[in-house]
Length: 231
Image (cartoon, rainbow, N blue to C red; front, side, top):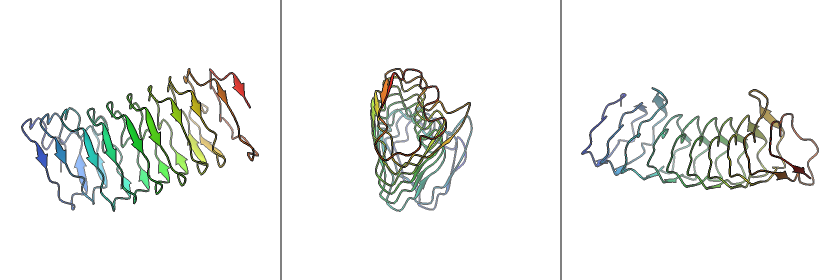
């Protein structure tokens, strides 16, 4: 399905996509203001980008999506700028949430990451400004750069002890983040202008490194500019 294929089809309410669909172009359903229901095709693997993905931008009636069992990866930019999406149900088969898959979902309030997921790629949930709750399970290993950047309502994060890698600026400007644990397996960082994982986290003033940790990775708390206490 090409870019802008159904742009501005404002009376379109329901779309049934065949499971053979493997590619959807940027802004394919942009401003389909009447769209309330669309399924997720099992074969969907890629997006043609144009200023991001923005496939469902302006779909003001599309508030929820169910990703079906059998899906192992959500493609980059899949739901980028789905600005009315409040609820997402992820399958137990999911392994990877790719780059910017849910970036700029400004209405998304909560998300549960299944135990099957091992990787959240760069910007996976960046600038989800209403995101308050995120549940992650043991088995998650890698959190990409800017994964939760600009999630300004996020207050508490529980990282599974299986997380061994966190990307630079992963929690940049999460201004309400006041509590986050230190995962036992954490050993590496993807740098970008240093680490800056917690830069701009104005409410994060203390951190406890748990017993069992033998080394703190390079750049771990680089530019954690409001951190007052470390145990």
